[in-house]
Image 1 (cartoon, rainbow, N blue to C red):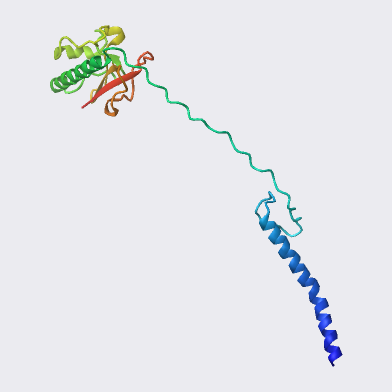
Image 2: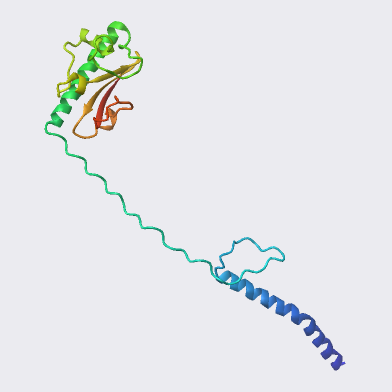
Length: 195
């Protein structure tokens, strides 16, 4: 009986040995695969898919080093720019007052169809010339040339914007213009809107 038990035991070992060996091999493969970067995708392997080897993929190379672009130093304002800008702001305030008087009298602002015009360079076509009824003479930019350095005006009859150039620095946020005259030679514009 003892002999039969011994034989039975060895048969059991013979039957289980391949299963245990196969389990150990699979466990080793999983440990190796998890501890190495094979460069393969992380999707599960389908039956019959070859097991990736332990070779490593290419190592990442560092990207380019970015150097920040220096912020250009703004050009200094021309002499007298701050005083001229103060005059321009006061002139636009006077124009706003004249526009309000015009609206009180005529029930709307002088219309330009919403497009920007010179304030009153061309008397026959510039709607801003109508303000001479309430502000005479109309102000002229401190640089003195109404054609080159004048003021601009736009209105749809319900609202308006008066525009001047601004020399010293960018104007405050509330005075920045959504639309400006087509003048590439002017760096900054100052806008006063109403009502």
